[in-house]
Length: 120
Image (cartoon, rainbow, N blue to C red):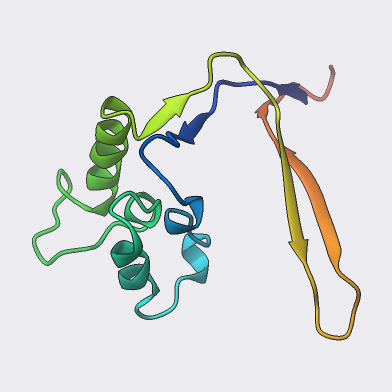
């Protein structure tokens, strides 16, 4: 497998004063009502893209996924997200503490991966 850099997108700090207002846990951790709380927190909260609302009128051409795609494209066009000028590999750190244990840091990175044949 090859690890490759890419040009990621970041929130435009000229439009977002507090990153805490726009971050979200992964969609599989959403509990009842969490999406509403995150939606109210900020109009650019990433939850609007990762867990767009379903509606009774959803169809194959207008649904939570097509609306998320359109919203992401609009935010990029409006400059809510800015693309990094150079490709990069992005370090990722998660600090956490489990009850009764010392604090720990999980370290990783985000990059593109190119899957190659086993023979290589």
